[in-house]
Amino acid sequence: MPDFTVTINGREVPARPGMTVLEAATEAGISIPTLCYHPDLAPQGACRVCLVEIEGERVLQPSCSFPVRPGMIVQTHSAQVRKARRTVVELLLSDHPSDCTVCARCGTCELQALAEDLGLREVRFRVPPPGHEMDDSSLFVVRDPDKCILCRRCIETCAQIQGVEALRLKGRGYESLIGAPFDTPLGDTLCVNCGQCISRCPTGALTEKTHIPQVWAALEDPETFTVVQTAPAVRVTLGEALGLPPGEIVTGRMTAALRVLGFDRVFDTDFTADLTIMEEGHELIQRVTTGGVLPQLTSCCPGWIKFIEHFYPDLLPNVSSCKSPQQMFGALAKTYFAEVAGVDPARMCVVSIMPCTAKKYEAARPEMNDSGYQDVDYVLTTRELAQMIKEMGLDFANLEEENYDDPLGQSTGAGVIFGATGGVMEAALRTAYEVISGEKLEDLDITPVRGMEGIKEASVQIDSLELKVAVAHGLGNAAQLLEKIAAGQADYHFVEIMACPGGCLGGGGQPVPTSLDIRKTRAAAIYQADRELPIRRSHENPSITEIYAKFLGEPLSDKSHHLLHTKYTARTKRAVQVERK
Image 1 (tube, rainbow, N blue to C red):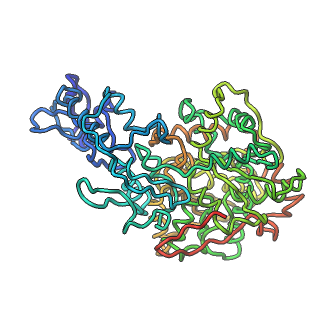
Image 2 (image 1 turned 120 degrees about the vertical axis):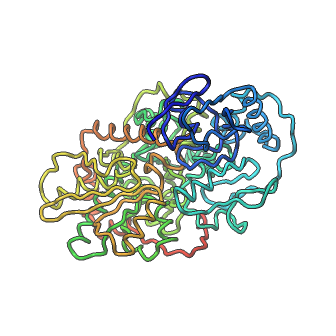
Image 3 (image 1 turned 90 degrees about the vertical axis):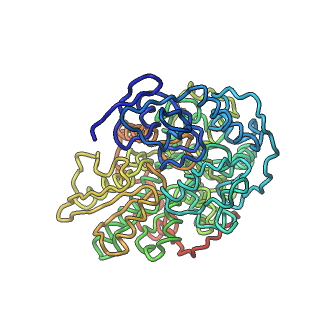
């Protein structure tokens, strides 16, 4: 059937077969409020906020799931529609806690914004909140069932995008409740800590477990030497949480803000992203040339690591033994940097600014203490750092830009692109090509591994070797790749997997809301930051050369293996959270 038109609010708008009323209206610039709908997910039609009046239909219909047809006549804001929407939202608010001013989602709560847009100033049907017990068993998330509006976004995100299914709907009617199966505390489930449920929750029902009080305490303690590292993706997302447009690069202002907060040293996780490429790249070369286990799977993403530990433990030998850049940094901060700076590592506090809630879990893993201490003490998400900056009253948009400190602050464009899906692969190929061939790679933009397709494949000819690679983001896509690998149907040499859609720039600790368009904007900024840096290959970072010469020796040396590599754990189908020491 060819394209056709429908009439929305008296205006003819183009439509296509398979579109919903909401999609047609949105493309035409006509706004219909939604609550359970999310562009990343299949429509649920659960909340009924997007109801519209359609000529010929006996009752109002949910625009998010109702298909268009030629000649359809729709009213999106008639008196009947407005009355129905107000009633729906009033009913949602009837037993919703009224602690908005102290809720973590105050100002970004979709239910709060919708009530404001509808002009609600009273709720006629007030009843006490259900009084469900909060679940703070997880190291990364707090679940408050009283604030849940049963939109099912978290369930569908965990199932459709991640394939984990750690959450489900229980009970019926007024007794309905979203939680883990069999009333298991979330911390004891198969949850991989990715935080995607948080980033799609419209209210404060799911929030990260904050480390802000502990970080303030460390900053205010004169006996504690505080060190902070900032992940690649944070520099293109922090501005969003502070009122700037998506994708604005705020690296220099972020560095300045962290100094104002009181950190003694401000470093860049991109430095250890470059170091990861040196270690992981040489590990790949070793496997390819000595008949090692292939394909090698990346190990930068802790959500993905926990996923393979639970669901595909037989493939753990394929996983690179490299720690993530966050954990490499922590180990080096409390050894190499402590030695260079003359600081007692026992009084050092290492804080990470990460786009990811799973990094909180990773930092607490008991094996992450090769420095002789817990390598990373606290992890703040992008959202948490934004909150601290607001608390300090900083005019972030107008801060003078500042540079990172040395020696762990110098990085390359290869380190920056770690923040986007395909970035680890591209950075590794830039170095692997030159190490294997001994020749310069003229075009550093390896575009086949870029983009938002769920699974990407590419091959690079390096002398006589055709290096075959694959990239997946979102754990549902990862599972498809792993099934092929387990069945012996894949001949890849190297595979990059990131738990979150879009990679770290779509991480569970990033500003809300998120969508494909927002993630594309952030990715464009990541690649812009790469192009603007004078050095774009990890092995050309002079600080990396120096740390090998003065401290590590060479890639895959005994010292680098002790500090920068680790082992991962086959887990049962019933997880038990590690305990923070």
